[in-house]
Image (cartoon, rainbow, N blue to C red; front, side):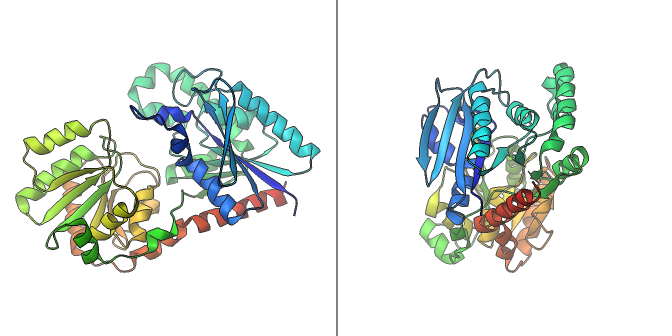
Length: 400
C-alpha cells in the first residue's frame, strides 16, 4: 500500500481557550479534538503518518513537539483580529511545500480540516482545491446562520454575505464532510451536492463502558442512597441552560425533597449562579467544581440521570460518556442531540430555555426503566470512529 500522510489542521489559535491564569498551552492542545483524533488514528493505524498543524498568535516562529507518534507544528499568525479570523501565511506556505513534497516522494496526502466556517478553512478549500480535503465540523455555523444567531453582527451583514458567497463557491472542493447536526448536514448537501456528508462525532475511550454498581459508587462518594441524583457536567454558563436548570430545581424543591442536582464544571458565570442558589435557599443543588478521572466515572455511575439543558450544542461527548455508563439523559432538542437521543429508549428530549420542560423531563426520566442504554454508545467508541474515518480515506484515495 502506498504511504499515506494525514495533516489535521486546527482552525484557530489554541490560546483563545486559555482560561485566566492558565499557561499550559501544550496540555490544552493535547485535549483538543484534532489532537485526540490524530493520536487515536496513530494507535489503531500506526502506518499512517500523522501531523497536527495550527496557527498560534502567541508564537513568533514555528514550534514543534511530538506526542504519541504524532508531530505537532504551530505557525505564527500573520494577523488575528478576532476568533476564527486567524491567518497564518507561514502555515499556508508550508502546506504548499508539503503538497509538492508528496508528489516528489510519491506518497498520498490527506488534509483533514477541523472546522470549515472560518478564514483558514476557506483559504485551504480555495487554494488547495485539487487536494484530498476532509472537513470535520466542530459546531460552527455558516455565515448567514451565524449573523442570524448573533444580533451584534448584523451591522456587518455585507461581510457575512460575502463569506456566504465564498462558502457556496469553494465548499464543493471538499470531498468528505463530518457534521454534528441535521441542520449542518442539510446545508452541506445543498452547497456541496457531490460530496460525502455524514454525522460523525468525537469518540470516547473504552473505560467508560466498565460498569460500577450505583450503590458502590455512592458509598465511595459518600452520597445518600435514598435520593434521586441528577448530574450536570459542562461549562457553567447561560448557553448551557444553567439559569433554567436552577429555576427548575427551585420548582422541584417545592414539590419534593428527594431529588438532588450535582453540578460538575466551572465557568465565568459560576459566582452569579451560586449566588442564586444561596438567595433561593436551594438545598437540592451542589456545585462540585472540576471533577476528572476516576471520580468523574464514579459520579456517572452514582447518578440516576444526566441533564443537559443547552440552548446551543453540537454532539455532546458528555452524553456519549453517560450512555456508556448506562445513564439515561434529559437533553434539549438542539444541534446534534436529536441524532443521539432516541426518545424513551436512552433519554428524553425537551425544549430549550424552559424550566417547566426541565422539570417534566427529570420527573419523567426518573420514572422510566430504560434497559441497556450503553448499547447506544458503542458507535461512539474511538476505535469505531477511527475505522470509519480511515475507511472514508480509503474510498477517497480509490477515486482520486
